[in-house]
Image 1 (cartoon, rainbow, N blue to C red):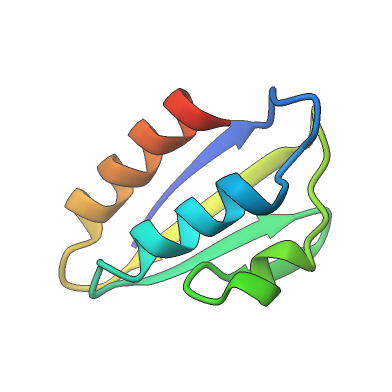
Image 2 (image 1 turned 120 degrees about the vertical axis):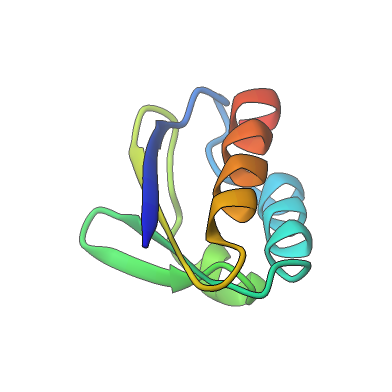
Length: 85
C-alpha cells in the first residue's frame, strides 16, 4: 500500500471540477484508492463519495492506494494534486 498527503490550496476547496477529475483519474487505475480527511473516508472512484467529504482549503487529504498498479497510480494522483488542487 502507498499513501501520500496533500494540503488543499484551492480557495474553493475540493469542489465539483477537481473532484470529478480525481474520480476520472482514479477510475483508470486498477488499485483501490481512498481519500481521507477529518476522520471521513471516500472511495476515490465514486464522485458523490468524494464530494461528500466537503474538503475545504487548508485541510489535509490523505490518499491511500492499494493494488497492482499502486506505484503508478500514486504518482499520477500526486502529480494531479500538485497541478490542480
